[in-house]
Image (tube, rainbow, N blue to C red; front, side, top):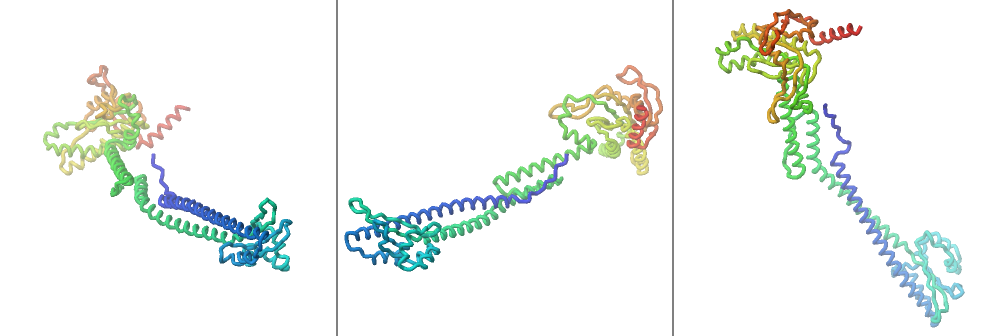
Length: 489
């Protein structure tokens, strides 16, 4: 099964890492800024409370003593008018007697206008004598002015009067806003620097991972020549080394597959290499057609040739023969000296295994005849083959041990196929009656005399293949379909 194509993400690993680091920096900076702002606001609020309380006690004390001694209103007026220089932010002071009647007071028009503009405009529209009385009933919610009341009592607990003070909180609010702006600016700069550093770090970190991903994508596409440079000692280096080991193993597997496919068909090679569970040591009973072929008079020919010439001669002929076997979906099971054993129907089932074997034999004899003509013209030694074919049951599986095994078929019908091959003369193709019954309508055959064979009690009827009634497998399939249709009718 082919690997699904790999598609790159819209967001690369480096960008994701940079965004993560940036978000982390932003969260930390925001939390730190919030903490600092809260701390600054709390500190300023506490300072304001302390200042209001302290100044309220001073002014209240000044007025309280005035009930018993002379009271100097100019001193209070100084506190109000010079509130900016003194840092008190005192916008107004209003004194009430025990009956809540206005006794006197003063106000800082500028501070009042900054802290409560609307209230300051309403007061400015009143006559100067009515302004202090109007202060007492005003609502300061929603403004930067905070009212503060001091109750004055005699030593025996009798109420002498009250002092109403108004403090401007505008400066404190502006200071807090400035702190917020400063912290936001610092947070923004920190996030910008964090993003820049994160991008650089992520790029350096993700570049080797991207190289691994690109190489793996090429491997998934079938390019097994990929190899990564191992120049790091961290996890990326371990990943690169593991990748190189993996591709080396894949190349070795591919090489084994290619080498194996030189001797068996592609379907057979894939099953033997991939479907391990179906190729167990104990084997399986299969319906197969077995083809044996052998050079006639090879011993005499090899006596006049150097060993290297013998091997070259076999390779020249076998190159032609193996190609024909594989083209017809046969499996070259083994080479036995100058003999070849081919199987049709194992380890994978094929349609028309008997016809494929007969077709292979006929094509081999034709190809060998043409090749012999060429070799004769070149003055090279010639050989001819005898071929035997039989169909039946056989045990197919891995024969051997866990250390060394061979996939083959064994059984009485396999031995019979070899016996039939030994009865064939050079250039002759002999088949058993079983095979003949399955391909009689697809090939022309002549009956031969029944012969006794080693290890078999009864004589075996053989048939010589002299030609084909169809041109190939496709035409044979069509004829088989027509026969089945006629049988059903």
